Image 1: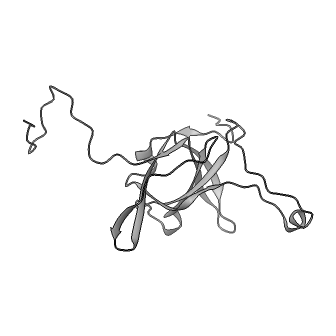
Image 2: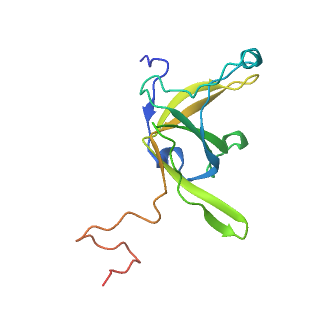
Image 3: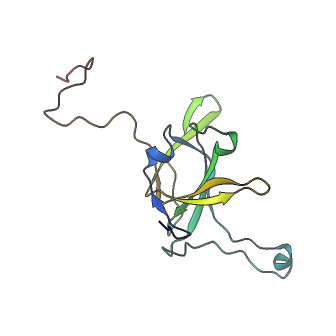
Length: 154
């Protein structure tokens, strides 16, 4: 089976981030690289545009608590959107320390070879949106029996 280079696979948020994700920093435009020579000539960097969707690219760095290796604990997610996405509000966990739990919509992963000297399998992660994560389980439908040890609502 041949899978063409650049194939993007759809994935759910729970598959990619089973323990959730915490946003670090802010949403920033993904800018094209400019060499020192080009900067010296007065060229301006442009924001990257996704070749498949035509949407602007925005970068978000998140911490992945489920990462098994240290190098995988910090992940950059590229958000494809026409306007800069607005992340959810941060949550104060103790005085002076705030975290911003996030979830991503429309996730895709693209396998790639990463690393300079030592190569390893990595992924480019893209999303179409950023949102506040769902807290708690899925709502019960009427007529469902409560799970063992769970009380039925009155």
